[in-house]
Length: 167
Image 1 (cartoon, rainbow, N blue to C red):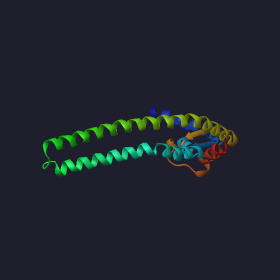
Image 2: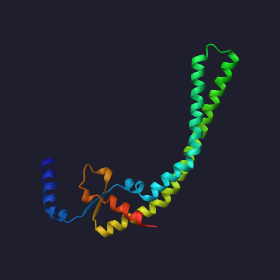
Image 3: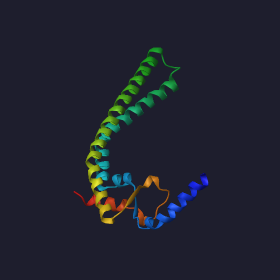
Image 4: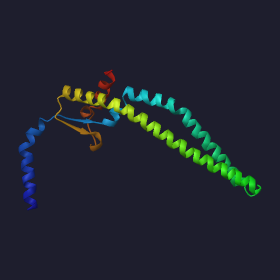
């Protein structure tokens, strides 16, 4: 039975081999096309500037907490109990502040990323559609599903160029 199935598959491939020769195939790295576009690169720079103050506050909190932790580890045995408890409480408060501010920053960044994605995705889809029509492709395969591809079959750079031309 298995041999019969293999023969059927091979004969089908032989019959349709000529049809496969006429199929025009392209490979597209959709994520790369999105992230390497001029608009996405500009957003990355703007986003870094926008969120830099909050990131700097987080780094300062982390540095302060590390300093307190090191002091407690180094001098903790020599300190009076009240001083030790005060520093321990301060360390816990900084850890809580870090956690809350970190979560706030992550949420704000995710919202901003999502907004930009919502504006870029339609442009990317239109650029892909235009490149596909211009190239008259029959089949487009995601780059993640391909082990290796000849550069002439990869349309990612053409999609990026087309997207960058759009306003």
